[in-house]
Image (cartoon, rainbow, N blue to C red):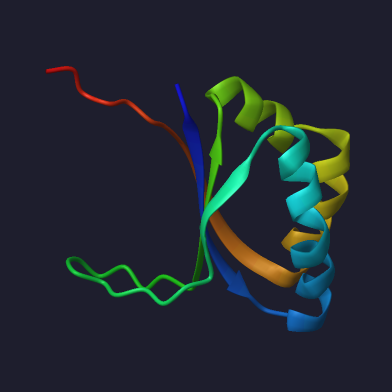
Length: 99
C-alpha cells in the first residue's frame, strides 16, 4: 500500500536550501519515490494552519519511505535541510476504504 511523505518546509536560507532541493529528488527516485506536489500555491480552507512550502512524495509502501528517510544518501541532505529550513514532516500510509 502506498505511503506518503508530507512536509511543510519554512526555508530560512534559500541559497543553502538550493543544494538540498537540487539533490534530493535523485535520492527519492532510488526508493521509487515520486512527487505528487511540490511548492505550489496553497489555500487554507479550515483551521489556523499557515503552510509554507508543501511537499508530498509518494512511495510504494511505508518500508520504502522509511528506507529512504534513513538512508546514508539522504542523511547528508537532511543535515543540509536542518541548517536552512524549519520543517514539519509526517509519513502517511494510504488506506483506501473497501466498499
